[in-house]
Structure formats: C-alpha cells, structure tokens
Amino acid sequence: MSKLNYQERIPNNVDLSNDLSLQRALEHWQPKFKNWWQEMGPEGFQGNDVYLRTAISVDTAGWASYGKVKMPDYRWGIFLADPVKDKKIHFGDSIGKPVWQEVPGDYRSILRRLIVTQGDTEPASVEQQRLLGKTCPSLFDLRNLFQVNVEEGRHLWAMVYLLHAYFGRDGREEAEALLERNSGDEDNPRILGTFNEPISDWVSFYMFTYFTDRDGKYQLKSLAESSFDPLARTCQFMLTEEAHHMQVGESGITRMIERTLEVMKQLKTDSVDAIRNAGAIDLPTIQKYINFWFSSSLDLFGSEISTNAATAFANGLKGRPDEFRFKDHSEKNTFYKIENFVDNKIVIQDIPMRNAMNEITRVAYVDDCNIGVKRWNRLISKNGYEDFTLSLPSTKFRRSIGIWSNLHVDPRGNLLDNKTYNKQLSSWLPSEQDKSFIKSLMKQELEPGKVASWIANPRRGINNNDISFKYVDLN
Ligand SMILES: [Fe+2]
Ligand SMILES: [Fe+2]
Image (cartoon, rainbow, N blue to C red):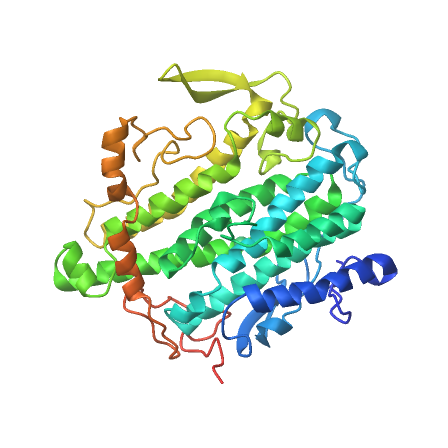
C-alpha cells in the first residue's frame, strides 16, 4: 500500500518530490487554485472549523480520517489507486498488450479532451453550490455540502495532475483554463450544459448529488477501465469519494419525503396547499425536481449512436462501466438493439455494439437511479400512501442531445404535438410558482441538532457522532 505523503506542500502518493519540474509546475498552480477556492468556492464559513474527512490511504477499507479543519486548509492532494503489476489492456482492439504509462501520440488529443471534460465538471459543481451555505437546513447538511465541495476540489486536482504530468505545455494551459471557465458565465461557461444550471436551493442540491454526481460515477467507472493507467488509477480512487456524494443526495431526498409523509399523516391529507402551509414539500413537486435533474443528467452521456464512443472503446481509452460484467470485450462484430426515431416513427434498430457505448452506459445509470426511486416508493407505501408513486421520466423526455433531442415527448415517453407539449410542460417541471415556494422554505438553521421544516432529521450522525454534534464550529 502506497503511503499518502502529507508532509509535502502538495500531499501525494505519486512520489512528487522525485520529479522537481512537475512539482514546481503544480506548486505554481496551487496558489491559483486557492484563489479560485476563495473567490468561487463556498461563500461564508471559510474561517470556520468543519468536521471533514480526509483520505489517509487509497484502499477502499478505512481510507478516511475525520477531524475539524478550515476549508482553505483542507489537504487537497494527488492520490492514485495503487498500480497493478503487469496490467494488460482488457478491452478494444489491443487486448493483452501492456497498459500505457505514457500517453500514446495518436491518442493525445482525445485523451486530453476526456480529462479536461471530466476535470471541468469538478470545480463547476463547487461554483454551482457556492451560495447554499446561506440556506442550509442544518449543521449536519452544511458539513455534508462542504465535504462534497472539498472533494470536488480534490477531483480537480486529480485531473490537473494528469494534465501537468502527461500533456506538457498544452496540459498546463488546460489546467489554467479549468480555473478560468465558470459555471453559468455567459462568456466563458463550463463545458457541459448541466454544469451551468444554477443550484440555488437544497432540493436541487440533493437532486444534483443523486442524479448528476451519479453521472459522474458512471463516467469515472468508464475511465477507470482506461488503458492509460494513470487515468484509470486516478478515477478508481475518485470513485470512493464520489460514493459519498450520491449518499448525500439519496439520504437528502429520503429525508424530504419522510418529512412530507409525517406532515401528511399528522394532517390526514394529501392536499398540496395544506402540506405546503405546514412547511413541507408535496410529493408532486418532488417528482417535478426529479424530472428536471434526471433528464438534464441524461444528456451528459452523449448521443445514443456515437462514432466517437466507438473509437474511444476500440482504442482502449474509455471502457464500459464494470467492463468485467461483459463476456465479449472486443465487441467488434456484435450489435445492440436501440430505439431510434426514423421518418417520424419510433423504430427498433440493431446498431454496432461499439457505437452504442454511450447508450449502454446510460442504461446502467438509469438502473442505478431506479434503486433509490424504488426505496422512496416503499417508504411512501409503508406510510399508507400506495396510490402515489415517484418515477423516473422516460429517457426520451426533455433531451437536448441525441435521437430525442428537441422532440416533444412527455415523461411517459409519448410523442406529443407542439402545442400540447408546451401547455403541459409546467406540470412536469418546477414552475416559477413551485420554485418560489421552495425558495421560501430555504432558511438557514445553524443550531446543532435542529433541522428546517421541510426535511426530517438524519437517522444517524457522521462517523458515530450524535446528530446534535457541532459539525461546523460557528465561532
Ligand atoms: Fe467529482
Ligand atoms: Fe461528486
């Protein structure tokens, strides 16, 4: 097990002190990152001690240590999963050859693009979430937000390390640009659409961490298969951190639903007005937020039929999530059934498997998203409301990329005419009225152990601490 070295200016397990020019380049980037964190990171609380976990080893068992630290002093560093001896390429056209420790010239620009695109999402989400501290529903949630934020910062470090270490001057330039683009900036936005959507309330935050961080999980899983070994090892370790972000999302949504059910039972009603008057969020509104964030996150997987994805697979750059699940790792002459939209009709087509890699990844993602939805429905029916179920909208709904983009499809997957679609859209997505209601609930709660009206207390605290533990010191 490689030790994580926290003694150096940049904590790492990549033997940075033996590569002085790389170390110098990263030390040059470090103050720029810190500036970015101050300017674009969480607003407020930068001088407060926060109960954060920090990586102490890169194996999945017991890698974290907990302690109070001020966010700007968080030990962001470069941690890669341990190398596997004699590792071989395990998918695509070059199965059995050794994995690459350097970037092959032919794949340089495509690998750089993959790393930059992934890297861009990490600081983007910190920027999107920067104002949420002002409306946190509890200290527990505030701490979870900051944990997610510092780890997204570390994920940026992970990608910047690869750019600096393996891509020379253009890698360094890309690393600078990662701090220059900003979420939602009109002139210089983040690369992917979802990462320019504002996250101005906590309902959106939980939806984002449930749905959009889960997209991140699937992208990282695909890259963790890469034949470019430093990328694969970086992503393997990032996945252990990512799991926590989705956990924050899932438990946040669960607690919202618990609170709603509690109010419904107390008042013996499912009236939207009555529930809202009691300061909780009615289930139909929660469904609308699911519709918005799920559909937005689906676009991140790219087009259903993609020659870029085929090339990335053939060349061994990006595999399928959990490639070991599949029998055939070459997929050279195999086919995949896909729904396509041809001559105004939905048809089933066989397309070359390699061209379907985005869709295969998306399908795995959707199945994963459904696990939480099923749990929430069990919770709802257990409380006596089996008539209401939450669901994921059709993957054809509200898409901006791929076969279904700009078609008028309802959440059940039915094609509608323009007029009907536009008329009903506000019943599927959060309306201005819904948003202002949600906004009215967003009030900061900083008393240890207390939570806002719209969310239930967590069932347990963090790292065996009480719920009323001071997860953020306020003075
Ligand atoms: Fe991340
Ligand atoms: Fe994340």
